[in-house]
Length: 300
Image (cartoon, rainbow, N blue to C red):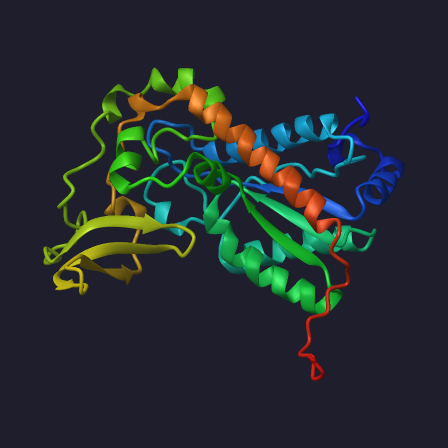
């Protein structure tokens, strides 16, 4: 073991000072939230971000190119007002979350951190992170990277259709949480048939029969649905984007049959996501900061 620890909260301040230098100004910050996840614990996104961080640290210990990591404690609250009707969901306003992230980042910038990898367990936290990252780039020239670990896992496993995701329990069995699988599957009986009819309308909206197949994109915080009266040139139904909530797409808070969850597949995907983060660390180490991206008049 080359690192005594990678976790900043386990270091004293002398060690933090040295770790920032040895990590070459790179800090990793896991971010999650508390929100409903059908039969899974409401802390699922925090467990995902924390589990991802643990795997990254494990792989970094084995990598001769990485001398040190600096990993902050998981920031456990996030923004998900579209989940607010489910008990256990706690949501922080974008404006508040943005300033919170900014204070965290500026505290580290003061002591030499210039590159941030935000290991995101909840995509609803991305808008305030993106806005904050733009300000810090303009002000300090620092680099902000959004590491969406669960997206990396899915990307590694290959493209999947909505029907395939439904069968595998897309929102009911987290592919990046294999360690929770055995325990949570014991609680799954009441939720086995949460994938409703493909032609289902928006749940709870009267007069919305023309809109079917509702889904929710929490990266943007919007409800999407297919419009039966509007088609593409190829004959497919067109999509409409509306401000809505997750429970209007899936009233029980899950999608798919979680009993189809594959633990071994989840472990492979989890490791692939962590290896992707290791590759990101090595790649951004080569990027010169402060970043200055102004138009070049003499491009020739």
